[in-house]
Length: 171
Image (cartoon, rainbow, N blue to C red; front, side, top):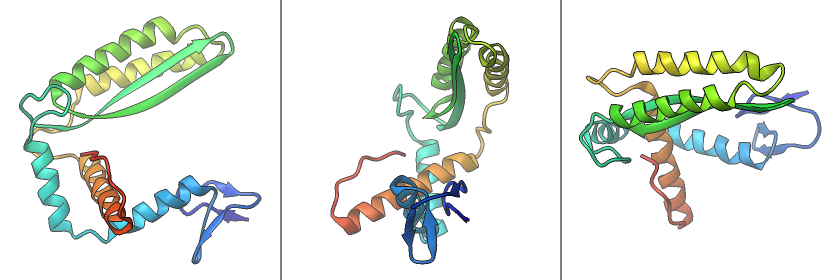
């Protein structure tokens, strides 16, 4: 049995191939190609863009940086259905704190209503948001998450320019 080269899930039937690599679907095939392109971008190019984003204006409020990737965690439930997710946000610390506080409030109101996962995941996600509030990324240097996002954005721009397709800039 084959494993997807991007998401590492098992491929039971079908899948997509790109040379020697196998992918579970078209989305993973595209993401795998993006990761391969990202690996070819010179480090100095990535570092320049990372510092420009980090020291630039916040994309949310247009205020002063430093800008970095901040996490927030959500959960909502309805009887036997519970959904939880992690969200990355490129912003200044102030915008990130607002998002994290909103997530905590939302989780406390909407998270508990599912059995059994709502009762389990609500305290988990609230705790993760509290930790994210208490322990933000360093302000002195960009985080590894920001570097990864910028590298993937540059790869997306490079792939679009070779295909002649306009892009939307992520970072």
